[in-house]
Image (cartoon, rainbow, N blue to C red; front, top):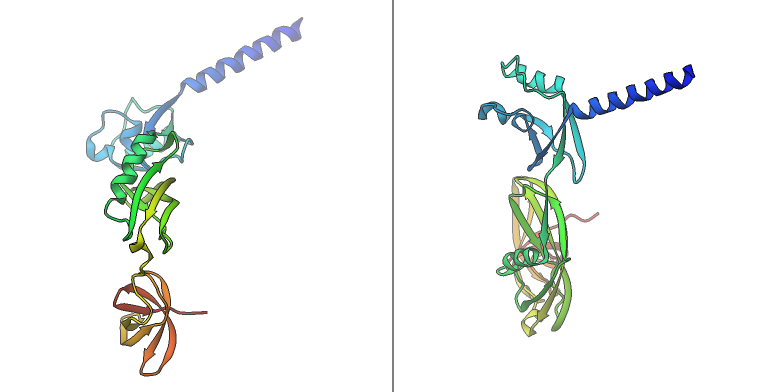
Length: 248
């Protein structure tokens, strides 16, 4: 009987302690990739509230910031005796859901002026909805170079979400393209004359060269350099400039 009473009392104590500990943790949600002092303590002046407390948790993760860390950050700003400091703060990352129509509008808008010549955007086929971290400031859209042929093409673009210079999330979206006869033409046809350049730090040397294969801007192609006649690999910066690439 005594054992039963003690066991019951111990169980009640543990439940009470757990409930008390749970109640002592305050949950907050932050929008960006950093946690600021104003996110965990209300009523601070803006210059203090903007103090950085480190990274926000990753996608669907949490981060717990204890009272000692918060009090120390306040003390470093010359602020002591704040009564509203919680015992602990559990930080969540704010998430955002984009539906298919929103993703389609983003892809269409970003690709309108970036499609390769002879390429027409058809249907955008995103997932019904996607969930990603909120707080992005820029979105970049990358489309692989289509092949040099005509007809329909199933491809995919990559949407990259950034907050400043921090990458937050990337998303692949299926798209349908239509390639016309113009898409079969390379940016730099074989036999084109280019300025061949060698760059080493601040030193730059140039000569004349001939591209010996059909190539596109940004790709690497063999270039015969004059007057030596040597064939060297170079990256085409534009239709008239090729920069030598180092080979193993």
